[in-house]
Length: 121
Image 1 (cartoon, rainbow, N blue to C red):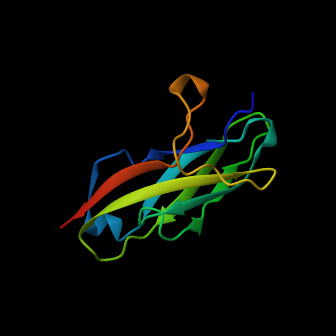
Image 2: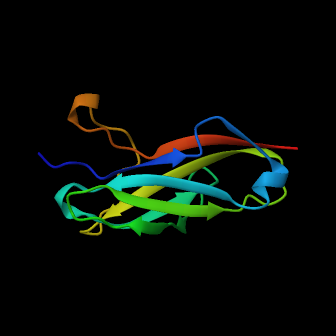
């Protein structure tokens, strides 16, 4: 059994509402990633539902058998809108996390974690 590479966004919460004045200062996005005994070599963040990707900072690399802590300071600009934040990880062997959820819950869920954030005036 191979543990699938996985990642998630812990902050901000799904369906968060953030004032545009606060968002202009930058929105901290934080989470974790795990790659089984392969470790994690890279974490990427998207604010446009996976259309484009930016490299996140690995704050705590841990070991090959621990969760990696990552962060990204997201600057959504001056647009009042709804955003789909997405994260993906690359394991220590260079394999990018699977996009689609293709396993049963009990077998280790795969797929990209998504969070909806609402920026309002």
